[in-house]
Length: 431
Image (cartoon, rainbow, N blue to C red):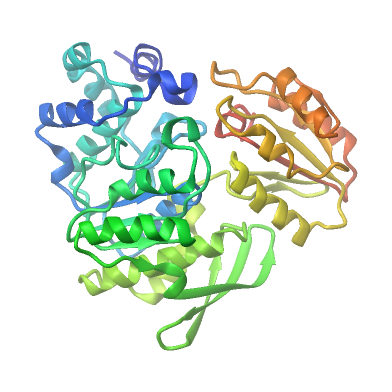
């Protein structure tokens, strides 16, 4: 079996949520428990940090991984979905999973896969755990895929849990209210395990407080621990002054993740580090600052306010739900208020597209497309819905043609934003 054959098996023989949606979602973690048992429970052989949330969990995971690596820890990182290469999902010290391991793991789990018929996500979670255990990582940062309570990653016993925020996304699976979604995310909160909550409101706070009381712990709220404000912003570099609320002392941080929405993630990360240091990790301020300046280089993170060219400005961002698009629009208003905007957009079919379209500016130019996966919302339907909101544009067979046309139409003073889905960005050539 070659690496390509192994991936073909993973993509086509196993139900894949990112491609087909709800049909691949398993509403329990029994398959993962059985898979891990067959592998001698690798998830219990390394320390882990578990991260859930509607938005920001990927950025937060990568920032913490970069910091731990900078401090000298052998650091595993599991995230999803990938943009270009399957190996993006499973990394150690920024390096993608060894291809021979993928081949060998696929071979050795074929029989049990025939028995329990896991999803793509369930098997890749088990693969990540097996890899981290074999490689004897010091710490692994584990991002949930969907929700938390029933997510396949929720078989670990982390030393720290983090919930970045709660928003209305995947409502067909997680619930139609913030309270219901918060309940699912709160499922990663464990007994006697500290938890950091990145953002809360009155509704979600009550859910988290109830769960923490049951688990006999006290939640730590990032917004009550650190306060981050933007002091400068140029391209992909965000400069922030962060105040420790307990002593009113401030430090300056430079992030190579340029989205201003990263300020709340930064508060969450620094709160997490405070807890980790109390438990003996002794992560230095210098290493923290150096790591945050080089998150992209260290971890391979892409698609978060990536300014890939100037004149015209071209930005790639994986924002794909109402809150994510709202963050993008706020930053565009702050940074490029006098620029003509061009949006290259495509979505999957389980998003609240109407709520997203209602946010978008009428005076922008739109280029609608779709990724070439079964779960994609057809571009023709997207155009129809957009027209009902007085958004005008054209449809394109793929994202590359859409970007090409946007560049032809744009002047050097315009801004082009490509967003709406990980899978739209994955089809950009070259990325």
